[in-house]
Image (cartoon, rainbow, N blue to C red; front, side, top):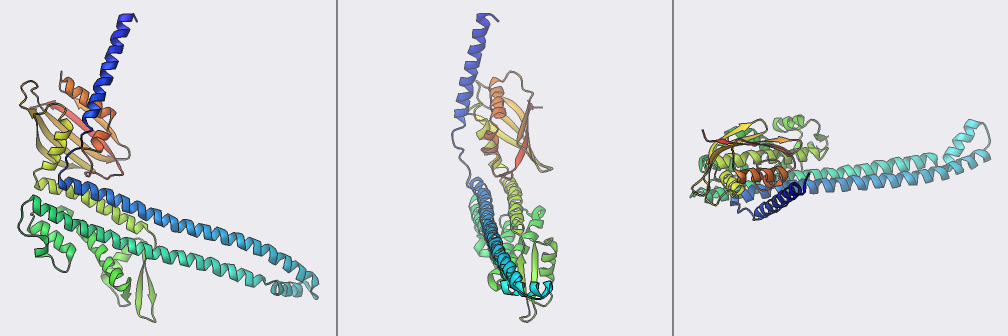
Length: 398
């Protein structure tokens, strides 16, 4: 390669580096998110944080149990050695048959007392752990429901303001706050949640358990309770009932914290569907603002028109038109954005637009910095801890 070609190659590399650097800086401007966007993103992040706190606390309980059992085991080994020496001494000093010597030595050395002591200590330690873990699991479930109900009430207030409604949630609210919230969405906000009714059934079960834990300490009458029995049976062993016939009660227990973790995941799934339902009511203005932020590098006079939003398996597909009235940079092409949950985050871009250097460089930046999409554009629309597969297609307007 001659010196001229080398210089041209270096100049090209330097210019690309500078260009990419300036484009990266372009995305340092914080996107001015709508209050509803902020609500959904913040709530999902809080749910993840709550779950991590719960996991940390549970692990601390388990660590404390492990340490206690290890200490008890060490004490038992030491006691067994001492008892064995005492047993040998008593056996040697005793008279009679070997069987008589063994019986005497066992009693004199306190073998059975030692064994009973450590068996009781082991059982007591485990019982204390499971009791504390059980209390924590119940309190965690109460926190899950409180988070759900309180945040949905806040959302109703945000939507009342956004949609300029005169009637507030308080005007409709009855004793069943959760049902009142769903009724408010339907009757006042006119947001259709029929497709998400199965979530309401799950939330009602959480509400049922929460109320009994809060008001009765998780105690139920021994009389058959079909709703309770159905919930316990469907938990696949994560819930159980201890019967106290003397007091005529059944006491609810949560065997593993996984029961609570499942509820965190269900609430996250609900929120990721709810934000799309809300945006549909807003004629996808939230999504439009996100896309304008993404493509504003192309021109200051950018216009995004959402043409169609379809649900696909484990995700969503959006078709939109990008155009501008900037006479120095006339563009008018369509784009299809498909995003589905995946094990790892990946991106694929198909560009059928010829001779648009700005778009080419923007696409290259997205390929090299996928976080520009996941953190700025897709936040709140998908599970914050899962990967996504992103398919982006540009083609001429038909």
